[in-house]
Image (cartoon, chains in turn orange, cyan):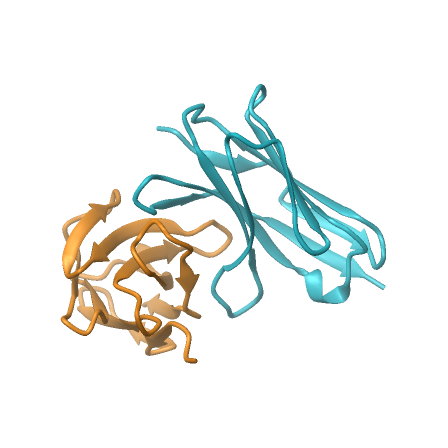
Length: 112
Length: 111
């Protein structure tokens, strides 16, 4: 069975640009969470979606937004990119949110 | 705000020895803790978890200890192998699944 898949794996963007990151959860999982992991630090929670509804939001500016589609895949959007947005963006899926979370390999975003 | 943090940034262990990774948490209301392993270029991988009503839980070669009195969590890896080289995170999970991670400990296994 396929695990959590994220695309693209690597991405380079310029300051001020917009980026969209994509995540496909494990088949049957209805919850998707997004985390930002800056180099040398632990992942920081950004969003959780369950059944297409936002369940929780971390301490991130409004430039960060996300959505979940009817097939439970998800997109994370970041507007007006800053150098400090450079990080590994991780997606995790779980059956119902509070169950065990399975992480994808992440998207490495570099903002120059 | 509340946070979960680690004592040691890097731990060097000889192959075959036991490893102990420590973690301090500050939220005394925390109910559920998880240890994750993250290898280079990969996402975090679940190792073992423990609820606040337990003091100890054992898995395959791993043991997690929870001391609620001093708000301390540890992960013990028995007979450390080269494949155990990775960054290890403790994390607190809330009732709806939000994970709050610590900074991580790099474990380096030497031959």
